[in-house]
Image (cartoon, rainbow, N blue to C red; front, side, top):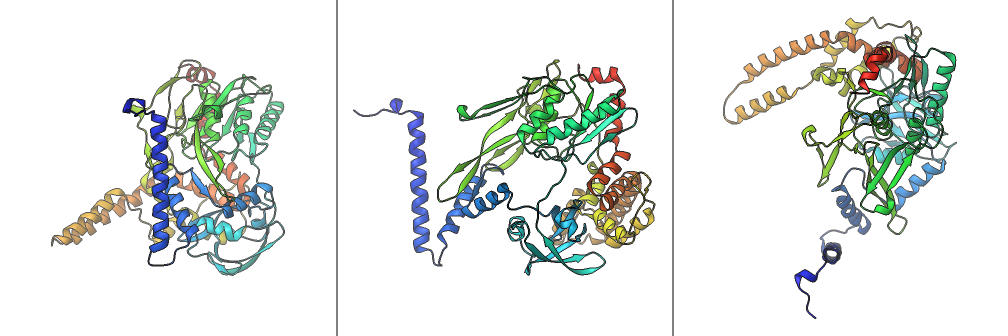
Length: 528
C-alpha cells in the first residue's frame, strides 16, 4: 500500500527530520575529523558542536561534561566550598568585590579591592570565571597560595585555607522608625523561610504595636523554590496555591501550595524589589501581589521564570535543559524575555497579556513583576550609571579606606570628603561615554573618511559635554554620598553594616514606612 501525504502523521514527519539531522551531523563530524588538515581533538570538537546547539536556545540550557559534573558533585556534597567572597572581573583581573565576615577569605587577610594575580603559582590573566573556579576549588582544610595586588600597597603574599562557608541569608532584621519592622533576605538558601519567620516573630513579640514589616528582596537572585513558597506561607494561609510549573511534558508539571500554618495573615507587608530581584524573589513578591497580601515598592524585577532539569547523556555527562516556566497565582508567567534563536527578545508592554489579582487588580504577564509603587533609582541617570559600571566609586572607597583604619559606628558615620571625591574623579579622568558621544565619535570618523576635518568642532562639543557631566555629578551629590557611605560601611562592618547604612538613606524604605503607616492608602493600593 502506498502512503499519501494525508496518511503521514506530523509526529512521524518530525521523527524523520530528527533522524535525518542526526545522520547529517554524524557524517559532517566524521568527515571533518578524518580529512581536516590539522589534528583534531574529537571530544573538543564534539563539545563545540553540542554547546553551539544548546546555546541557540537560552542561557540556562547547558551541556555539562564529565569533569563539570564532578565539580558540581563536589560542591553539592559539601566537600568543596567557596572562599566567602564575591569576585568580579575588573580591568581583566579577578577582584574581591565583597568580603563576608569570619569566612576563609576574611580570615586569610584578603581585603575588598584586592586583585588576584596568582593562585598556587598560576597567573589569573586570561582566565575566565569558570577556569578561575576550577583552579580555586578544593577540599576543606587545603591551602591556596595567593599573590594579590592591593591598591596603594602593592603585592601581597597570602595563604587561604579552604573551609565551610556560612553566609547568613538574613544579615539584618530590626525596627525602623514609626513602628515598622524590617527584614533583609539576600538569598533563598536552606532555612531562609525559617529565618525570615523567626525574624518577623521576634519583631512582633518585641513590638506589640507593630505597624507592618518590610521584606527587602532587592538584589536577591533567588535560590530554592520550596523556601520561596514557605516565605509566602508566613503571611498567607495553608493550602494556598503559590506557583505552578508548566512545560511540554505534562507529566512533569507541578503545583506548589503552602503547607503550614501562617504566622500572621493581617500584618501589613511591603516588599522591596529591583531589577536584580529574580526567580524565587519574583515568586514571593509576585504571589503576595497576586493574592493582594502585600504592597510592592521599587523597580520592575528581573523576569527569570524558567525551570531547568538535568538529564543523563551518557559517559558521565549531563545536559541541563529548560523544561518549564513558572506561573504565579494569577497564572501569569514572570519570564520577561523570550529567546529567539538564542538571542533575548524583551516583550513590549503592549504585547504582554493582562491578568487579574484576587481583588481584581490588573497585572501584566511575561515581564517580571512590576511594583505597585515605582521609585526611581540613581542608576537611571547615565552619568551615575557610569560611576557604578566603571567602578569609580568602588576604586575611590578602596583609596579612602586605606587612609582611615577605623570609622565611627554606622549610626554616627557621615562622609565629609566630597572635595576629595571630585579630585579623584579628575585624576581618574572619568568621562562616561554616552550614546550621544558615541554617535559624535562615529560622525568624526565618517567625516575623516570623506575628507572633512571636524576635530575642532568635536572638541568644543566634548568640552561642553564634560562640563554638563560635572554639573550632573554635582546635582547628584546627595545620592552619590549615600552610595559612598554604604560602600564604606561594608568595608568596616561587612554585610550587616552595609544594610544598616543603606537603610539610613533609603528612599524605598522611607516610602515603605509611609505606606505602612497610612492604612487607608495601603488598603487602596491592594484594592485598585
